[in-house]
View (tube, rainbow, N blue to C red):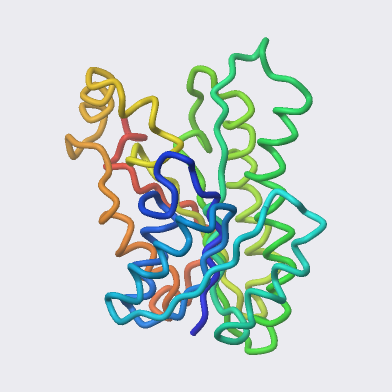
Length: 251
């Protein structure tokens, strides 16, 4: 089984941390061969080394996912290390945290391109190979902002609301031929995108209190749901947005 984890690597956390990196590790430990995509080669090499240290199989492609014109070539290159791709995790993301009056056409396009357009166009390139085997998995990364509004999150929220509907539409389009499409909507986890939040202890305590469990997310919390959605155990689950948020959204 071969997996592509499409992850934009943050200059702070890079491939040594974050949602995409953790998902790659979890799937490799479960027996998948993983190809990690991103721009920063040093962090990619580190991620692959960590996986291989634990007897997993991994490779990387140092590319710019935001370049939509290159996605067809990226899909071909991703199949070179381990064969045709079975699972795609779209973990790429950017959150510029701009108030509405500061959003420009350029920043809007950057956000909507990477967060919403790339997941679709990359998936579309990989789906034919999955359909040829009548089995595949697409796992998108949604957000609390797929269903809730946060300050300075207008463009990001629009993109993540779009991801929720994109996931449903992907499922309607491709699931009849064996390609299931679901999304994970994380709460607050320590990633590059949440660095400003994790630098504010009072805010972290407030967010933890908002959950039913009483704490914010830990990267290990991603393992189970990622493996489940990538496995045959989830054969009858598609088009779903699964909140991994300690029930933050219930309050």
